[in-house]
Image (cartoon, rainbow over all chains, first blue to last red; front, side, top):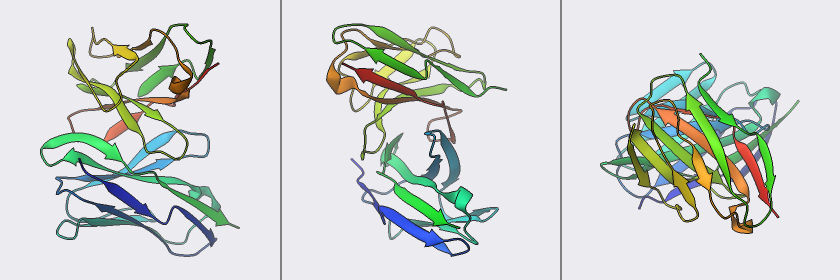
Length: 110
Length: 112
């Protein structure tokens, strides 16, 4: 089964800072998911990517399939970005049901 | 377009009671999932379904049952509630396995 590790577990930054959250996994995959869990508990899918880079507003996700690593970047961070960011990958290659990391808790201070 | 609707949002059960968590999606997604989220842990897959009439176990199925009689509905049944089932439960759906997920708002269940 794929093992997912996220770092850091907790991150506090000042408004405007550039944020990087990392995700590593152990087994080759076809696609990786980044999710955002709001303070109220709701979960939103941010990205699904299988190679290269995707951008949505101030959020950028990159993946290196060979190194089994992905990063989520937030530019010009804002207090409303405060949330838990979760990385998810398939259980193993060819089995697309997801296994989830424990998440990175991001707090942006005004 | 409501997405994935879960009810109830909160529930307190006594040990041994039973209940059904409801989940409905209006996106015509084939795949539906039930997850539980415990403090400090990643989401764990309880059961999933790839279409009406088809269900299968996930990582942590013990103590739960599901059914999928229609594409839209995927209820989760707890027959004999135990304190270990205290958790937050999320229903999710996707158009295809591995496709982008849509999550319900969650059900916070406490078993006392």
